[in-house]
Amino acid sequence: MLIIGERINATRKSIGRALRRRDAEALEREARAQAEAGADFIDVNAASDPSRELENLKWALQVVQQSTELPICLDSADPDVLRAGLQLISADRVMLNSATAEEGKMQEVMALAADAGALLVALAMDDKGVPGTADRRVQIATRLIEAAEQAGLPRDNVYVDCCIQPVSTDITQGAAVVEAVRRIMRDWPGVHTTCGLSNISFGLPNRSLMNRTFLASLIAAGLDCAILDPTESGMMDVVHAAEALAGRDEFCMNYLRAMRE
Image (cartoon, rainbow, N blue to C red; front, side, top):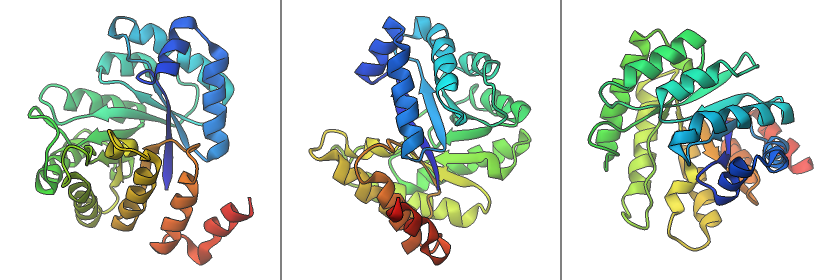
């Protein structure tokens, strides 16, 4: 299970404030805490102020890369920002977050990922926005996967995000995403699935409970990557337990190791 630490995101008030004040210590704490909690990648998003996104991203990347050796997940909706960010990555391994199936955007980001040998998060949304059903999510995912292959991206580098929507506004969304993940993992061997986990609980009390429970359901459906907060209490325990129960942890070794630690 690949874990992308989500906490360095400018939409969070504390991170937006750290970017404005150039508070390196705050970003360092976030990066190190996520690394220690078990993240495999650190997501870096600096898009709270579009006019300063690239400037803020450059500073944030410098701080984060000095704080941890974990690879970076570059997070921006602007292909030009992703392109510039790639030039600042010191590690061999990098992920781009993200491509969509929107006309005029899909091919550009996929070409960037292919040229850089990067992993790519591909959002199952198009010009009509986020789909509401499993069928539409799978249809858009199919377009994205086929386009990625045409761009020269191996399936192993593609991480389809089925675009979680809050169940507080539409109770069908949890089941729709679980079904979409199951079908993509069944029909496209080698392709990965990911998600922005915390979207599921927006607007609800005890969000952590909803997040952890939904993650277990997704792992049972085949999810093999998640964008989440690894420092959230009990979150990584659910990852290890769910993977063992899904038959993806031989002899439960990862679970046993985690419980000893």
